[in-house]
Image 1 (spheres, rainbow, N blue to C red):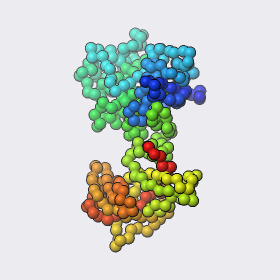
Image 2 (cartoon, rainbow, N blue to C red):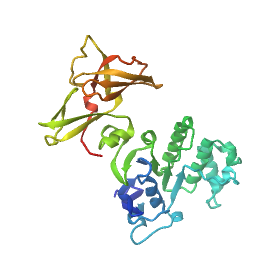
Image 3 (cartoon, one colour):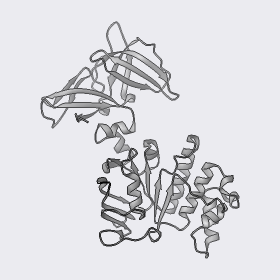
Image 4 (spheres, rainbow, N blue to C red):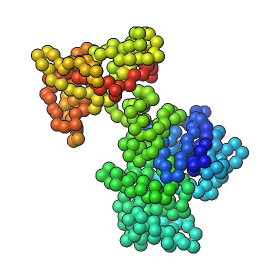
Length: 359
């Protein structure tokens, strides 16, 4: 545990209905850092947040803030005494209070007016101080909720899917503004989301959860480009999969040989790669491009479908070697007709090899 960590969670476990919904979970968040718990619905993200907030009691483990024990086997600090702010998908603003009074709720009178004015200025809502929540847009209500959560100067902010109720066109602006305010306040932030794009946009560190445990942690670039397994890769984007067997630390495929260091002979493996790492070339009288070190051997496929997606084209091809359909994305308008013969190569440095798991 580093002295700079504002929030520390050690070996947190929660059992519900005879099942461990969170198991042996540990994390640290420093001041000004945004850490994201990312994972599918039901993986234990929100349960973790409730235990840290003090709304739910863990069955094992410890929660500390700046060295102060908030919960362990022998002690439990109630939520209102934890100096932890909460933001949820439901903004839960008081409909009968003005914006200013919503932000001031829970503040002591001394200095409250100045703090409210400061925060409303920071979130761009000064002119709406006397408005009521129903008079605001969803994005404005979210900013009021942020200001209210920050008003008592919490040391830690817990955010559970706070942007999911916003119109998609507003989300990026609201997220960026929220992140800027939180960084300025030096708040340690733990954000829960099931959206990889949101985690990549906001987080300094991503903790990828599955079935109550953290399966991978790291900076967004690292988690995306060095997935722990096939499911981790697939959580962030579409993937293509080649299957083969290892012989002499090599797996032979129509795209050439792939190294499989440490994998025993006869073991089946999956070679995983993303659609954007496929390169398409045209057929030249039954031949494709020459093999290269960076892209390996070309393999032949036939176009099944091509669609323009706005920023890119998605082309689906049935491969000659096994009949499987691979997806390729092209950052332009590229719409070959069904039945067109094309050749594919793969960026070798963007392929991930995993031993095959029967799940």
